[in-house]
Length: 164
Image 1 (cartoon, rainbow, N blue to C red):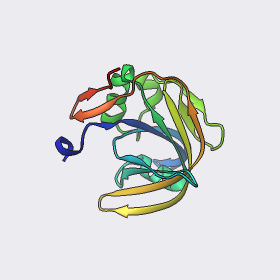
Image 2: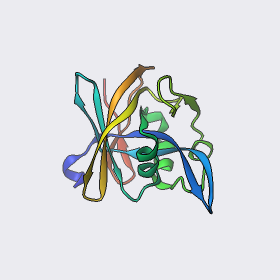
Image 3: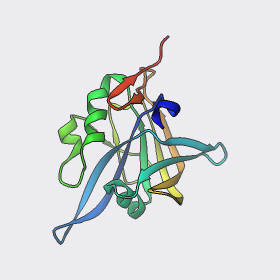
Image 4: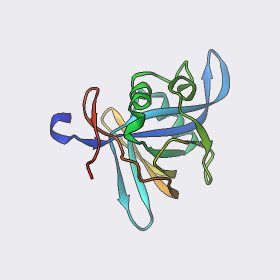
């Protein structure tokens, strides 16, 4: 399907929630790489992300009712690939990818400091969609940090960006 629908802008979704590992609960911050996302309404501002049901981030977003859409620059291709290839179940993706964490302003969730822009979203609805869940978030805050060229996914490990 990606040969037909791509290129698509790749984003990193960040989330925070209590998770259980080996019977113990602890607060976890996570990052997931996503190509399936879109604005759905101007008024109110709504944004949707599609997350695989088997992913840790799906459980975390469902539990916390919040997420941040981090629009990443092409210069962060290596970190974007890392976050897409590794599960956050047993690692800290911030530490392993080299990305820096900063706190969101309106929700209890981290953002990515290196992001070009961010949308802080509070979940208002979710829809089952085959093997994914579509989370619809009300945009609580949008932050434009720079006009650096963003990353777009072509296929597998191939990415591109825009031209001037």
